[in-house]
Amino acid sequence: MPISTDLPDPTVLYPLPGQERVVLLRPLITEPKIEVGEFTYYDDPDHATEFQRRNVLYGYGPERLIS
Image (cartoon, rainbow, N blue to C red; front, side):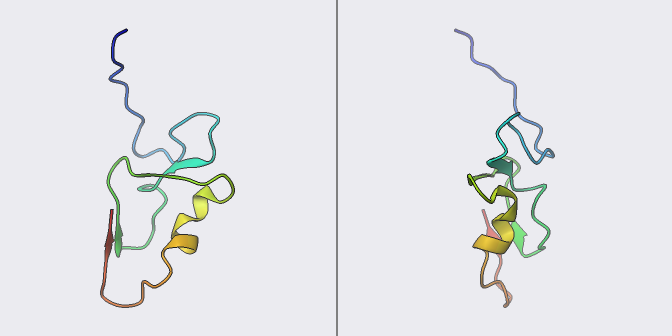
């Protein structure tokens, strides 16, 4: 079986059609102190698009989150 070289578009929020529980974080993040890789994803069955609000809780100082 050949290996697929098709990669999802890193600018698309939902990289897997029909799977709204999986999002790519780069198009979702708005906070400049958070830096994510091009294909960093988040899987949440209930709140996938709320990653930043629900998981980055203490971003008040000069620190940065790099993933």
